[in-house]
Length: 259
Image 1 (tube, helix red, strand yellow):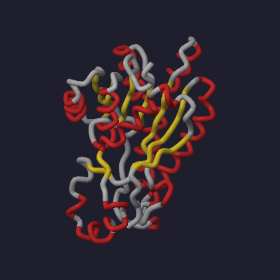
Image 2 (cartoon, rainbow, N blue to C red):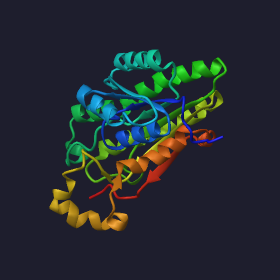
Image 3 (cartoon, rainbow, N blue to C red):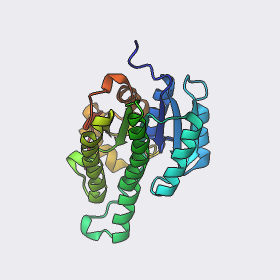
């Protein structure tokens, strides 16, 4: 039996219409997994789904605001109506540092917005998926995978992006707690911590002369990871091979978070 054959499995990917999320979606669909892309932008969602039309897994998309529990619950219901089950939830939606001001200069609104987008989004998506997975386990089908995209900032910190690092560290803590709580239901929880990534969101970064001069020399082999690099670990985490791998973090591509 091929442990990495995901035929018949179904995964939800929040923010799966670009960057890491798209790379994960493509890798899963390539292994026969059906994928539902959830994101705020309907056009980007549809374009991402269309780009995977030739892969073996079925791919669709839903407009969803992951910070809104009602929107998440509606998207989950629609996904279950279409596919009948959800085996994995890859919580990838979120926002980055949001500027270069120091901690003492931040406003309460900036702090609240960062937490809502990065942490609340993971909470609502994971909760909706976990409820379904636990119910299914009670019916004799114990299988579920929760995977959050975190950040190296949660380990190394940042320069002048403290609120971003705090949200990502909180995600890692949530993953560790869920790994303990959900293990008896056959549900695992893990996090992927990417380094620098080539994507539509980082396309302009190399035009920043200070970045090229000060940061690139400190990145191992001066390499940017590609979004597809994260697909392999996503396929592994979704497979039976990772049944006992839970409450862990996977650091990919190294890199640095502080300028």
